[in-house]
Length: 156
Image (cartoon, rainbow, N blue to C red; front, side):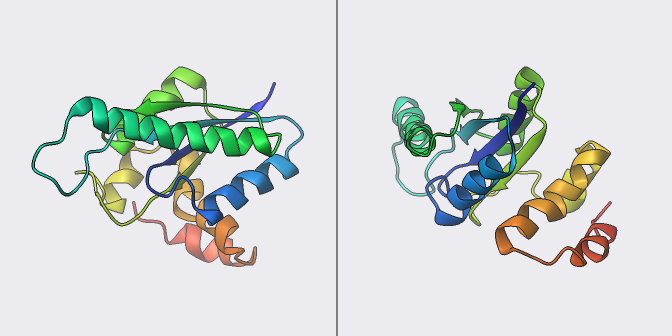
């Protein structure tokens, strides 16, 4: 069975670090499938923002990510998710049996529960090292010996 990796990103979906990480995982794994989810978040600026425009712009980001993956020979699917990134991720996990999650985010917009202590309490124990260390370590190419120190200090 293929390893299933969720890529949760919004404005960072076309960023070099994210795309490089997807390519690296695809190169490391014999059988991997990616599922891209872009939360349907509203812009920070503007007086009148129509829901269909917000959804359409998120769909464009999904389509661009999938086009990149196809061009690289990487298998994947994608969708526009809930406006709350946490709910978008949990929906995808529940529906698709995700094995690994890559989260790439910019500083804003924050969702209501963006305190790492909250996230640490609601994540399954086996996901905490991935969320609080493994994703960043892979992108930043951190040496393996930092894993014990960083993971041990993850908030709970």
